[in-house]
Image (cartoon, rainbow, N blue to C red; front, side, top):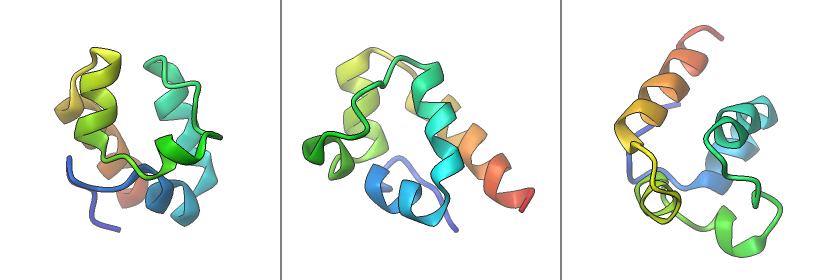
Length: 66
């Protein structure tokens, strides 16, 4: 799966529920909320004051290791 800052959180979670840990680690505890599942990584990181590029790198590494 290709992950970019424009990737939708719900799509990532649907591809691998274990990616939730990366979102939880940066304070995104609202993954069950329908609104959060429709957000892009960039939008969610902006709302939570975190670096989207760092999260994208971690998610890319996760999927590359599968």
